[in-house]
Length: 122
Image (tube, rainbow, N blue to C red; front, side, top):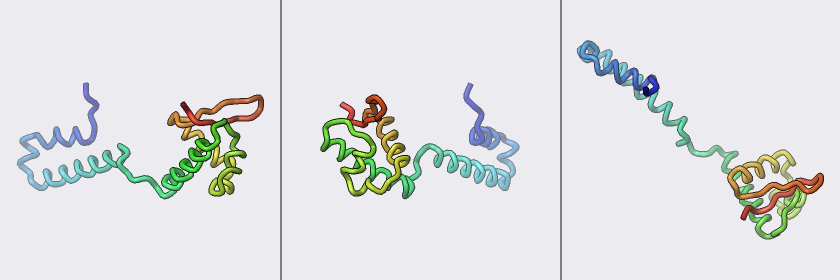
């Protein structure tokens, strides 16, 4: 059975003959239905990225560039040392950006004794 959403419930009510007889009620219910549809469409990822997300995409590009030029896996500190744009970022920020790249299978994370190394995915 299909889940009864607010939009679906309003469509069912709008289909009733008693409701159709009252034009003011129909107008109000259609307005409510439009509001729920608009709210639902914004949840489905149609929003444009925030300023921070756009900046992070640029920073991830710098990280990918460094990893492409240096074919061997590197630590966060080495990656930061290679690019002036990444030099002032915190370790936590770099770690978060690299995690996003690992999650999208662009970068591989490996452990070498105590050091965590990041390299390009193949």
